[in-house]
Image (cartoon, rainbow, N blue to C red):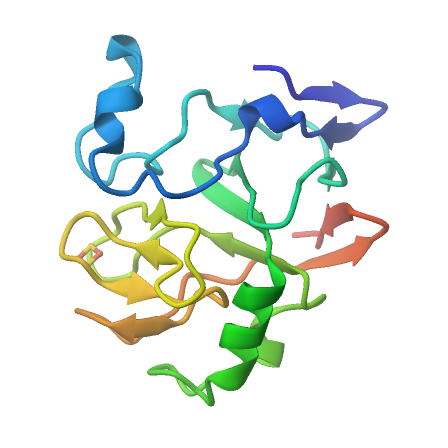
Amino acid sequence: MFSKIQNGRLVIDRRDVIRGGLAAGAAAFLPAGLAHAKGEAPIGQTETIELGDASSVDVSALNPGELAVIMMNGTFVGILRRTEDQQNAAAAVEGALSGETDADRTVDAEYLVAELKCLHRGCYVAYTGESDRTFVCPCHRTSFDAAGRVISGKTSRSLPFIGHTIENGVVSFAEG
Ligand code: FES
C-alpha cells in the first residue's frame, strides 16, 4: 500500500485507487492471494487501505472519476471524486428508488462518501466509472447511480451514507 498515515491523517496515494471499468471480469486482474469470493470485497481493490487511528482522509490526489476504498470500522467505505458527468447525471435524477435527492446524499457535490455495501444481502459493490450505473452489485446485479442510490435491482436502499465534512480535499469523519 502506498497511502500513508501522517499526523493522524490518512493520505491517499493514487497508486492505490480504483479507476472503474473493471466491473466485468475484474477478478482476473487480482493477484491470486487477494482473490475474493463474489461480493466479499469491492472489485478492483488490489490492497486494503486501513483507516487505522486516523480520523480524516486526504483525497486531494484523486482525479475526477477515481475511487479510494478504505477499510474503516470493519467495512469498506468509498470516497468517489465524481466527474462532472457523474455529478450532472446524479443531480438530474429526482428521488431514484429511495426518494432521496442528490443533495441528500452528498455534502459536497464533487464527492460521494458511502459504505460500498449493497443492502440486499450485504455484498460489496463494483465501481464501473460510468455516469448512470456507477456501481453494480456482483451478487444479484442491483445497480446504483453516482449518489449511491438504487436505479434498479433487488432493493431500494441506497449505499449507506457515512457522516463527514469536506474541506480542501480532506474528508473528516463524524464522531461516533
Ligand atoms: Fe446486492 Fe443482492 S446482495 S443485489
